[in-house]
Image 1 (tube, each protein chain N blue to C red):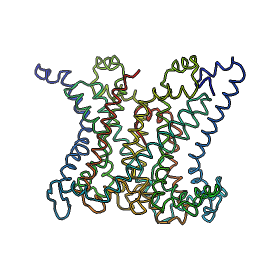
Image 2: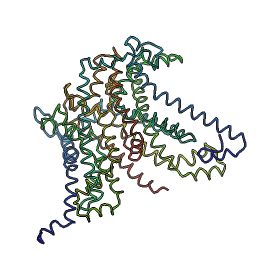
Image 3: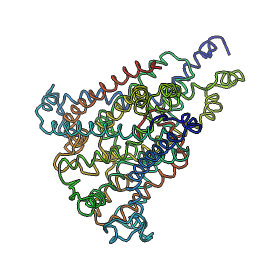
Image 4: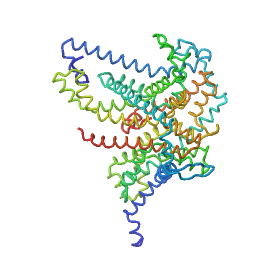
Length: 301
Length: 296
């Protein structure tokens, strides 16, 4: 090897070159399927976009249309209601289960229950919705049968606005609360035992221990769960698509379902892109808040 | 319920007076009762699915519902295959897409993860942060341009429309990078001194040690692709390309609510692979999900 080749192929250059080659596949994908689409999405959101008859720039018209679109108000309203209730109940039930599982019990029982609560998380939203569609039937459904046993008249779960929203929230909590439980359980197990011991020595009762020690020390985890679930809930799609298809009327239609309808059923890509930008902005803000606050809380201990 | 709430306190109660010990037991019973009640609520829909799948159709609407199978009509499990929905084809389609995406991610993510963790090159940190930031971008923002790209590349109604965007993953790169950072530098240096090139060090030293992380990534990816509905719904339009979740959603529609037994047999079969993977790899899945905060 002569000296010039050696300097080009010196270990340092060789290492850098290998590095770039190793990340190349990921970055080709990143540019094609994330970076370019974001930029393009912003551009399309300023256009009256049509694959067939050509497109033209229309400035802010799509965004102005969002302001006057009554269905936008409905779907954002639905999404917010779904998000608030689903996030609250997922977190609350998950926390309750985690606290219960964190009590003194045999490892076998703890692992068994943890697995049971966790399993629905792995099953496709589609399949879960297919099963629950039968359970929710007004006259033949299992749920109404048991409600009837305790004297409640048949509930029109899937056929009446309001109830249909309750139906998808219940389903969502059934499916996802296991994730909150899992993360809370890990958080609880990270709380040093000394805290509990000294509280007991001071004569604190179980309720005091929960509110004065467990809850404050768990607050970073609680916050994390709230934001993660919020981001997820804002994008809900699969379950509702199968369970109610957004109905009755628009009563369970969410923002993402509306984007789907506008983009891929009406092919009004420009308007759909503008709506997706509004959702993007909301999720971005939530993520940044989460990032800021979790950074502040990481040094908590 | 006064004195305790954690394991160590339980040990103390053995030496204590009687009354607190009895109160301990009530607390534990209440907990156990609550957990059992919740577990029943979680299991009932799945149990209903399974027992309905084995019943004659006429029995599936009988109330009160029988929770255990009343009969064993195994032939219900053959009916999805005889229906107008090409069940086997859907299964194969799902499997093909899922395997392609999973294998693709294992390759791209371990390569990039290794580079970001162990190789020095200008821009290493910046590029990693840019990639990581893309985790903030929801699917719905990128889907319209991706759709238009697929149309212009002629990939509509083609599994490639789902496979290609799927084989990279910022999350996967992150996961693998975290693992490769834990490898001792001496190990890699020793191999370098022996004259092995970077690629050989990666393939013969780093990859064989990363089995658990690769398995974690594979399981998470497999499950999320196997279950995905949004993308197939947009891109796959004909029976010979559709995936299982699409097919089962349509099966419900096709047969209306007319035949729960057959639909539930189909759903049971579709859930089976997930259940098997769960039983085998539970520990890894739970650990990975807890550590990384990625929701199914």
